[in-house]
Length: 320
Image (tube, rainbow, N blue to C red):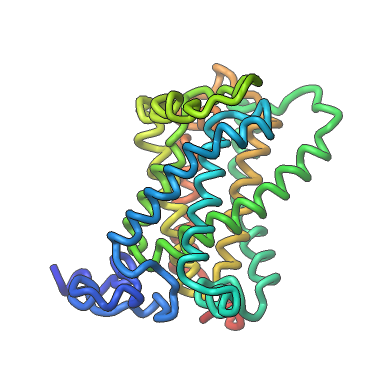
């Protein structure tokens, strides 16, 4: 068993910042986890920080809802939690004077960041354009007709959202948690939390301040886990995406190629949601339901992406 794990250390490795745990030593080293990775010292510390972030989120979401009326509750909760987790981990490990070193260790600083981002986004956009094209040509997911007059603005907003989400999520999942939890565990959790949402997201109704609103609505965040397609193709797709992004972090030593891939993926989801008709003609098991990545086509595409990131060629200047 140890020999098998030693052959794949990047799958199970933990950050050296934890003090070289006995498990990490048994698994044959950590060739792709930087010794400077600013991960929490130990999993207990990680759980404490995560708990603090969750409690703060439950307290802050009612306030954020007053400032952003009409936004779906699950978006308020998950985005607030993500930002707080990043803030707590950043402030807990580095003083402002050493944030430059911290960003470099996470993979956010270094040469050729822009070309890496562009290449990652291009690969992701081309891959999912093929998937969306197949969905359209086969009649499984026809385009909206007529297109909304605001489609250029909607597309620009989707692209900007993709960049923002890519930076935030890659910094957290591949910058921090990959080093602490290893590629397999962090990718599985990454997939699972994306289904921490209701089946049909409902906006927060405008009204007076309710300090316990988030606590009362928390149970609805588990509704998606009752959908079999989410528990099979959906989780598998996002797990494969997480593994592909971990592999890019390993091969390049930076996050920027992965941020580009992630941004292209978010853009594809937005295009699918805003410009395609989810009708009864095409099976959601093949084309996806209201979310692109819980269909077989997307699962196959992400399996191909994982293969490409593991075995495909990279420009020499992009390699670590």
